[in-house]
Amino acid sequence: MAEYRKEKAEVERFLDNVKQLIKLGNNIQINCLPWRGNRVNKTLAYMAETGITQTDIEKVICDLQVCNYSYTADERNMNFRDEQVWIFGITKNVIDTDEDLYIKLKIRIMGEETLVILSFHPEEPGCEEQRLKFPYKE
Image (cartoon, rainbow, N blue to C red; front, side):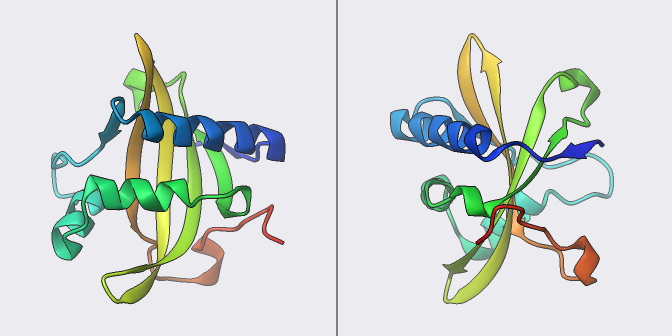
């Protein structure tokens, strides 16, 4: 998956669009279907473990700023290969503990624009080079 950095103005436009879609409230999907095989849907697992709802997730996404942007990548799913995913990270207090959250979003055109929340879960613990980097963090 090719990763690249969008300019600040592009990130701002993307986030403005995301927040507008959330405000309108009718075209939002969370990828919370169980995955096939032995891979776990981390978003679904995180929602079940914490009891957070789509409304909780939307509130966190509305708090995203350009400084939370990490990178953009081409969609890996061959059915949607012309689409891009946008990766963000933010530290939020979720159920009485601070979590470094990994958030993957995209906007899909299906008649009209739809916000698709592909991932919303804590960042994977591990070595420092695998952690999200934030090119516009001040």
